[in-house]
Image 1 (tube, rainbow, N blue to C red):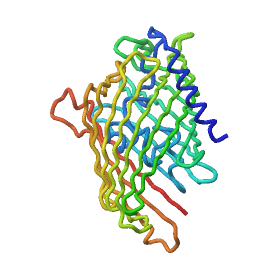
Image 2 (cartoon, helix red, strand yellow):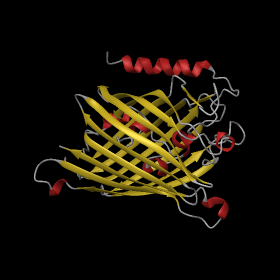
Image 3 (cartoon, rainbow, N blue to C red):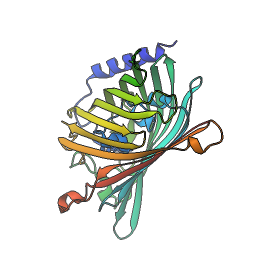
Image 4 (cartoon, one colour):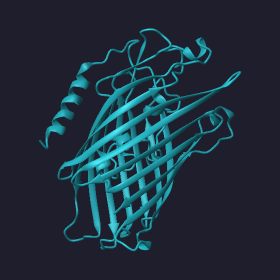
Length: 364
């Protein structure tokens, strides 16, 4: 039974890759790309080139790879907010989950994009993806997970004339619609600890995930019998972690950590090129976090935010409060930041943004 998840994932990926989705008007044209592709909910991902399918921690896990949530322990809470300059729009993400080695990991998350249109009266539209996630370690250092996603579309924007424009034809009045999709992901860890030096720990990870593998569509209720395809996204990646500790088993034993990540991303039901992402994270004294990354060869036609080559960066602070607790309970806070500060060029200000997050982990 332990290998069933791996077999299912391989079959799904092989089947999906061999379908050869038709590159026609029925291809994916950008519905809800704001949440699927345009912006990242986790500043760690944004700062590291926007890829985390082979992450080394569970935060924001269900968004990047359904298997990641089982890397955590205890109760995890994540919240992030993305503020865009000039635009009347913003993003919010929150998740709550619990992970136990015997039971696995359970979590709920919601990622929403709110768009405000001001004409004679102000109208507010919301797109969102709400996710129920379950994952577990099937056998030693092999993790698998699944997402059940509830997709809500309150706004379908015009993508450079490639799709309908109901916001104009109906006086900005749009009827919402909903869909249900499934995602699946796996992660394999390889620990390479040295028998002679216990203070240096090395981990190599392989991760893969496919989102909306059933190729679900969502209806456009402004037009009779018109459906928009949701993206079928395939992500695969590798990562390498070096953790230098003081040799103790304390939660604050880490003195230096390097996390390197590489990922490719492809929307299978679209004819756009694959996106390649490279990122690096440094954690100093288990407190200061520094990140940088590169996104290359990645411009989907419906996404105005991703150029062919783009540099990303970010930073964060980590604080543990277990020393102040009377029991053996552990409480950790991480405050992260990433984004692009306002520029002086008016043509670029609309794309500038600030992304910040709060991550809380409590291990009883």
